[in-house]
Length: 613
Image 1 (tube, rainbow, N blue to C red):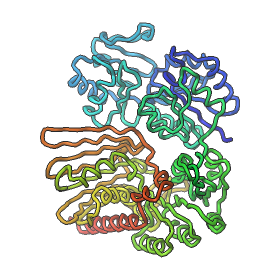
Image 2 (cartoon, rainbow, N blue to C red; image 1 turned 180 degrees about the vertical axis):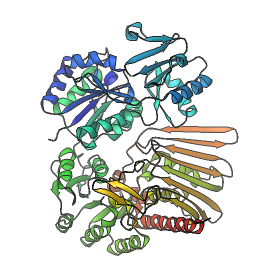
Image 3 (cartoon, rainbow, N blue to C red; image 1 turned 90 degrees about the horizontal axis):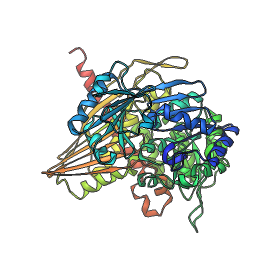
Image 4 (tube, one colour; image 1 turned 45 degrees about the horizontal axis):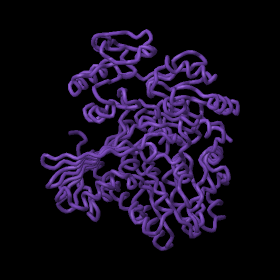
């Protein structure tokens, strides 16, 4: 078994109801670390309140504290990661919150220091040598605050939504106790801190096991290779986490560590044999691997990676130990008699692999985009139709519950006649000048930049939510931030777009799609639908699939919050034939590719026409 990073929340999860480390938990943590695994705690607690837990565990390691705002290495007794709110950001948050919660009392963490307003109600035993201030603004300086602690009348759950709605997207609001909410800068949570930690340790994310109990644990649980909830977890956590261990009152984490069962393939549905699946590609394929091992009636039996056989071995060892491993995908396909092939390789390699799979009569699920050009996508769609084999594209946003509810609302004409639909998709994967995957910087290989990576999904969302409308791009623009990027071996020339925007029309209905892969610290999907009787706005977090959907009509407003979800297409693929109706086919992949090509062409024409003006 590979070395794993095992990360656990403390209160309500690892610790018993009295906040203690039990003998069984102490022994279980000691056993897994002696086996070579790395044990990490991830908590909303500040560093000073984690130290006695680390001592009780008898294990001095790195702890993610303050809900991800600070990480501390107890072995070296030093801060290793600190992501505070700037002075200006903290001041803005204090002002905004005071306006909506007049009776608020604030606390704050500043590195290893606690700052409390005089009116903040906290057990004196937990205050320690806290700095006291009449108003937190008086204690604010250039060091900023790691996190703000917000306390108001009622429980934290009562004003959590108010804070989320009032504060701009540059802030993160979490709740892990009924006593208060916590505010950090956007992108600061347990999941992002864990991401940075495992990268420093040289471990892949699928080699992580995470335990939690509260909604603030959900991003971490969604990101980890294996997610486990304790039986006493919040209903929102139990609703989306597949594995559940015993409650913290019954040493649930320790019980799981004692058997240390990394996600196993679920047994097939009674009476139905499991379908064998071959996974091609491990970078984008890692997500598919996690989806697959969590899907009934599917069995991951082979993993291939032409560029890095070792990554295939590690992925299989972590998630499907019995799977065959190879760096020769064509040979793997030639030897298979039946089953499904998941193609998650660089876009330019899709044609050959899909053709080989269809030739063998194998089903195919391809990572989006289907091909680097509409012409190549059309050829694949025609080949799939001729073969009669299953052929799908992974447009996972179709599985998002909020997206599906918006689609149903538009289909039922709850907004009246649809006038316009706007889609904004922001990502920060290319915010730095580095080129992690040089092939993505060449249009002939990738099909484009932001338009190919994000626009493909946005255009499919446009078609999926509006039904049978026939969309066409009327006008647009594209922007390339860098003429070249920095690769491992030197400069990498690039000819793809980093951000783009286009306007579309289908009969009398208009649409706008905007995509960016350089929105530093801002990963978000937004859809705004305007109808003759009202409007709907969907805001989703691509990192975990959580979303908020708001309907407005006249003086009435209705809002629904959606917990994080995997958005895996595989349960639908493995289900009864009728369940597959909403899976994206190669025809859908072709339609998205055609809109990408129209947008690229429109953007190029606009750029060319304005040169020299």
